[in-house]
Amino acid sequence: MRLLGRSRARNRAGLAAALARQLPPEALALSDVAKRAYERDGLDVAGGRPLAVVLPECAGQVADIVRECHRRGVPVVPRGAGTCRTGGAMPPEGSVVVSTTRMRRILDLDAVAGTIRVEAGVRNLAVSERARDSGWFYAPDPSSRRTCTIGGNIATNAGGAGALRHGVTVNHLASVTVILPDGEVATLGSAAHDAAGADIAALLCGAEGQLGIVTEATLRLTPRPPATRSLLVACESAGAAVDTALGILRLGIVPLQMDIMDREAVALCEAFSPSGYPDGAVLLVQIGGIPEELREAIERISNIAAVSTIATASEAEASLWRGREAYYGAAMRKGPFLALDCAVPLGDLAAGLAGARVLALSHGLDCATFAHATDGTIHAFIFHEGGDSGRRRGNACGDAIRVACARMGGTISSEYGIGMEKRALMTAQFTAEELALQRRVVDAFQGAGDFNPGKVLPPIAEAAE
Image (tube, rainbow, N blue to C red; front, side):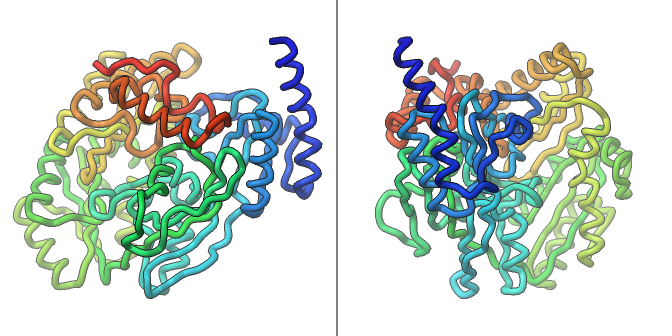
């Protein structure tokens, strides 16, 4: 064992020099100050000190880096913009972080086929900005879309408020170029709508960097609706808002977005970014289509709900949603918090929201909840006093809410991913056999490699209760 340890130490000692020979100086960060910035992601917990941080500018450099690490047995941690809130990009001690944020070229836009080819470091919102003049947009819209990157979106299978109408990342991924854990370059998928063979590219969605590093992707775009309208419905409670939302869906109207804010969430956001929301809970709805369709939809919604605001101009729509979109800033202003992204079946959304509040109160903690009334995602913000004891109490409450959602037939995570934060809870959602199957997929890609170790899958698979 001692000889093996010495050999591994020599391999790692020579890695920095090998990388320096392969990369331009600006693509390699070796100083303690530079490496410290990559010890954590959006989860405010520090990981280990990486051996090196590399910022390649092309797929060829990524392949060279991965091959060198694979040859020396050094773990690789893929990283995008670092907006992940689960520790999914947190490095173990002595690993190499490969950040694709400098790979931000938009390579091609096919306005006829409705596809766009981008490098992994392109921001989510930049895709829609580039496609706007051609009448298209990119539908997956996580709340971090202004900063998160396509590579990270693929790793976590990111979705957003429009998931029911348009789907999530996997539904918009045509093909990818990926550097496999041994450094091999593979192109998976096809821009054709009906490609032959197994859809291996889809396996990368949600794998959180365990199967390789995406360097390029061809994405399917969605036609931009001719017009949109946004509505605000004042509700007595979050449960009443859920009832109204489900009533809208029963009408056969599938909104672009439909979000619920409970009373506490409304008060939190109004104090931070006033948007004119009334006291109590609110339901925000955005619909799209031709003007005649929109008029009919608004009339039908008004027959079942007390619509208090109808925004028709783009500026008015943006103003109506501004408070809702400021919820992270509002939460940070209030104090230390834990943000959840669990989900339940739509029919159980009211019970899920009520259950989250009951569990928070049982832990002696304040709670504000938001929900996507299109896919059942519950964003519960659990506020605690900070420090180690506060974080432990907040985490215990968060775990209880996640497990409760899983037992309702939902999921412990619908947007942020699993990372390190939730890997121990995977047994609450998956059986031992299901986890073993996921492990076999990872092992088939990694072989003897070590890609993003310590993430997603628990070390010991136990059957879910």
